[in-house]
Amino acid sequence: MRFLLSISIALNVLLAAALIGHDYWEIVPQEGGLPMFRLASAESKPELCMDEPTREQVRTVMLDALDAALKEHVVNLYKVWLKDSTGQPERARTGTENGVRAYLHARKGALDWSPPQCAAG
Image (cartoon, rainbow, N blue to C red; front, side):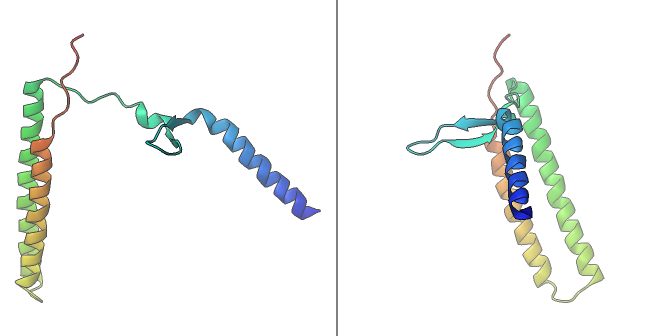
């Protein structure tokens, strides 16, 4: 009897949760398949748009911050080397290569970044 009561309570809780949350999900059509569900709030963010001068100013800030981050990364590698020479310079070389690889990837992303022009209004 307890088992059936436990199952009944669990099913009622699940049903209540489904009924409460039904407004928070939206159906997103997929190509040639079943619909996919996702949170409706994911679509509620306003579109990121800006004029050309602002876009270039933001891109400059991103690139400057990226340059500063790479410099800080290399400084940290040297600090570690000075504290612990075990496995050096190979550890520093590996860290530098990883940092430069990430830097180049992020730099390409910043240069390719192009939010749309805002609609006049």
